[in-house]
Image 1 (cartoon, one colour):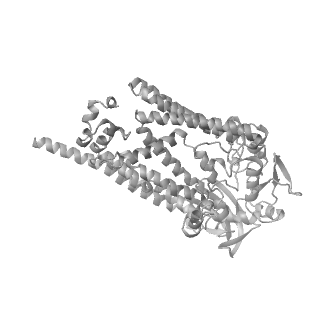
Image 2 (cartoon, helix red, strand yellow):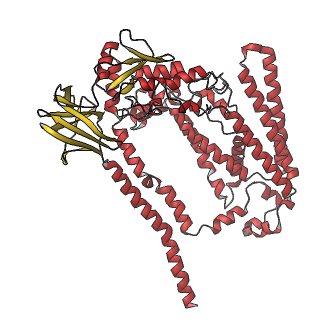
Image 3 (tube, helix red, strand yellow):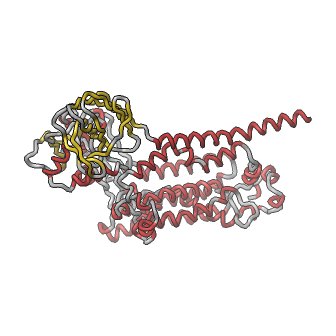
Length: 581
């Protein structure tokens, strides 16, 4: 082992390290020369300031996105908190801890045989068997190195990464432990989000970082060979045990679990074999390079095979063809599906949590033609529904109220949303059928309100309650994402009602003069207009975006200043020293 340390390596060590014998040096696999490099780079300079600002100023730089997002959160359907069962339904299933070792222990949607709890992708935590083993090695090396006077910088991060795994796992378990339910009930913001299992992304990051630290310290030495032989023996034991259990218990054991165990055994044996070969490969740089290539190939093969098929694809022409129902939507109106019907259509009829395969072409063709949110956008069809985790709360509440009505009442209320086509997975009887897309029925909504209309309004509902006015005319002259122009011809004073969402940041002007936008029918916009011909312009100018941009701009300026200033001061100092010399 002494031959692995060159004279250059020895001279690079601090005095205390030079006195250590080869056995003491072998107690830790981390390269001690890395400590010297970190020490030499510890003086303040532009790069250090740059990295510090990246850590401390990230939220400031992202304010241009975060501030408008926070505004949306405050006005979204989650502002009052997510319903308890909906929020915690995607809790990490305790049995899924097995998937840290065997990703397909409960089958996989890629092969159509997933039988575990919940959605496979919510609980997917596999980072590779080699990554886990190297993470364990990082912990072992840290335990040996922590007694030294100057542990390596990489090893100093190990305690934090390891300590983070327990709280993150407890949070991810959701309602399977008392912790998250208590936080949900008593700590603000915990009731804003659903899917506690998503906390596991932090565990995946920690394990990946630990694996990288362990890989950095994987040096050639005899104990690695001994552990390699043990890994080979354990791997073969897993394989033989799985085959024996299948032979004895037969069909009572799920085939996927047997295959996952066999896969684990083979991987463990291969990793053990590579650990044994490291002693031989470490004798020359050429052999070491080849060995490292094999390690990378094994890790890549493990991760690719574990996740293959989880992102199924279909040819691009699937999206290029126009949906048949798109041309059946009455002109100037929207397509609408109510929340309950949308959930049924997506998760009971089309999307199967246990099977991601795209082999059933007929089903996917029906889905493409259904105009379900947000497929209507592909065909340029306006929609009254939106598949998004954050929806404007008032509009989402309005749809929920309509969803609770009997079919006849729901159709009548859909007309007041400018919805000319109503999608549903159940037949409605006497309503005119416009077409079908597989199990989805498309019905014509009668007496649809236009998107812009003159209305008679009275106070109520936290704003105005409006009914359509028979006389007068309102025509949309320009329609852009952040600007809508409406030309009004009114025979008497009243209200212009625009069936677009009421939301902070929208401003209106009447013939160039600012006017107030009032909430109408719970979720829309209304502007008072006098008799005669007028032009009303709606512009979206959110203060939250300007505020966020100002914060981000200021932070960026400070960040660049801290990056450049040390270099400028250093240059002046160097010129001054040269002048004195």
